[in-house]
Length: 349
Image 1 (cartoon, rainbow, N blue to C red):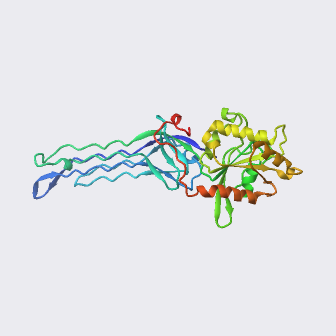
Image 2 (spheres, helix red, strand yellow; image 1 turned 180 degrees about the horizontal axis):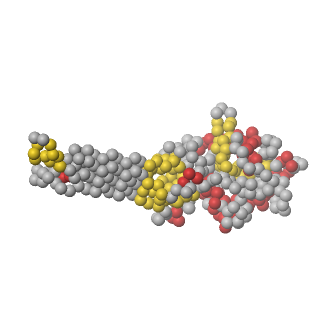
Image 3 (cartoon, rainbow, N blue to C red; image 1 turned 45 degrees about the vertical axis):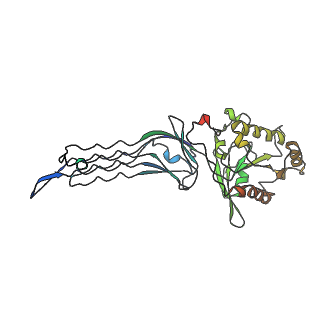
């Protein structure tokens, strides 16, 4: 099951209490304070793990608490620190404070970590309060509580290229031909109900990560069809691959279908709509000639690559075109989002 949103409660461990103790030994009648300090509570740490694909492992567990520190003991023995609780999350997870809406961390890189709930400090034992004028203190500090907060987690997949288009445009078939991914393929709309990732292998050890986004329809930004909930998964992509059926079975022309998807992208985010784009005319094996492709290119005033995902025709040219657009971004930093501002004040909201 693909789960890309979750709300959880995190709490750092409580610090251990300091100990109040006095030393009593033979031949040392005066003794002295020897209460040890309490241990620090463990912290809750999020880690971006490449081995985790979704937020499914958070389902059914709302509370995540780190271990508390142990109390101090006599003979100046400090309590053990609580163990940190490390929670693995998919790369590309955005961590929001649920109450304020502030973005706390964007886990955009593998093995990146962040502390979301710091453990409380351990209390000091009575030995720490001994002075020249107060040689027998009879008090110790309690441990401090750990930080606690409600969090909202949102996953945005990180891929080089995102496949978009109307239902039944052939995106899933294209993904299966370019990579080892095996998405569901059928002759009816909305066979893809969740984003699919695949890796296209090129010569010279080159790789491109592809994301297949469930089909959009007109009005998706208002909730029509599957809505636009999955569009956020291509907001980080370098390139958009716009797949168009050049032999549609309905009364719409390929150019009209292109306009529908472009409008939905713009209504979702102008940043997304402004990404580099490759327009692909799919299912040319069903056309008698390339005239529909040429007509589409004239109407939208841009180059269109003819392919057949079913037969493999034109795929080599497409994958090289994708690499030519993706390669310059490989050394660029992964796009991050404005930190410390509520979503309604950010350009990517």
